[in-house]
Length: 311
Length: 264
Image (cartoon, rainbow over all chains, first blue to last red; front, side, top):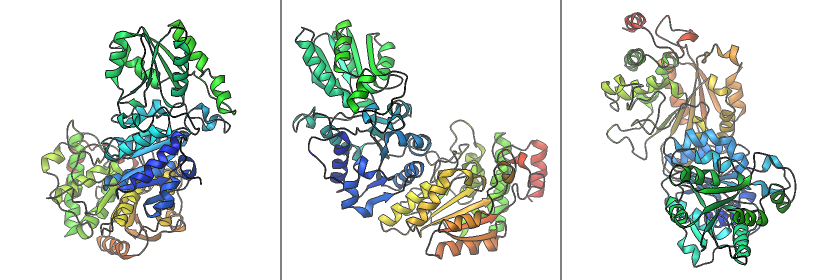
């Protein structure tokens, strides 16, 4: 078990947030044998009396969290994103339906998770959780934003699912800009003119890189970190489409049901706008290095640039 | 006295299901003596303060037997007759399956089997973390133990040594489609639960004296306890007894009259 690192992966931000949230006695952490990976291990080390180990049993973990929530606790349960899906019905029927506020974190989300192979690469988690009424769904892009958003869950009124990532990513926020971060309010990372790139998770820094490159060609793209997939920040989207001729969405997630889908659903029924969705096409991954896999499925800076040029 | 209450509850159950034209009379009638015994001797609750944080919790995991729960909640002042009359109708506090979001006195939202014990573990952990005195009682069906999550939960409750948590298994031997041993034999459930670290007692779930004694035993034993209650599905109405077709079927007008005659 390593200490929380600075400039780490979003899962490090989650772990750091739990430690700070421990000051509130209502906070309880639940684990299913992956605390070292999801980073709830730091909370466990400091507060074993408020950490509940359920073993490799995700369905039980989620339902235990529901029971804790019903008795006034604020439970934070985590496992790999993919294994959380095993407890989808427990989240749907046991947590969200009765209106209980429990928080689920799925780490190692996305195809970039890498060499473990396709069984560990959740590319549908954001899609399935956002279908649950009243559920907040988030996918922060770096450790600072993951920490800030997790901290805000302490007094959040809805159950939530947060996807964190395994790998370190460059920080998109600093100690000042992070103060503006709010659940449900997307962050404008880069101002532009006529195109908007809306991204989440590990793809946000690639979106910024692409926008920086494009500016040298005279194409000025906004870059938005849509860390909250649900509720969607439609206010910002409305503002963007009033000046932009098109939107490029970028996510390490299936193009079916994720960030791109949710923006398309909104705009197609309000202000039809040209959208290019960059994500994992309808396919599974395989073993490989993170960057190799992202390249394999077309989640690259070059592809984002090309999509913007074509738009 | 509790026997009289159980008889009134049986009448409520068949009337409710008949009026709704749908519901689960069989598993409600098999469970009702256990529920009346529990509410009559163990549950510390307050109808004037249903959300009292220190109340005992009752997690009805076999939530299709909701008429049994609504009937006892009516008897002790949580629900009115008109609440019972609205069972399964739009906007009613008496939802098809028990639901904590809709009904004062209901501590769990059921309907999908196998989740209640896990939820009860959460309640029991919260009680212990907060150094409270409240206990959690979970009722599940015997067919329900076919769900794998039940065994995840049984394992974790004894691992966490939850003295304030007990379960009652309504061993009525019938599930939705047919008899349990036809659908999926569950075998010697008492031995299986005991092997997961629980104290186990088997009783006749319709003998009120034995029910009360077993509940007191569970309440005072310093480990999670399981009461395996051997019951008769549809108990109290001859043509529903041991009859799989009344798992989830409402009596018609004539059958209601016959049932109420038998339940006088």
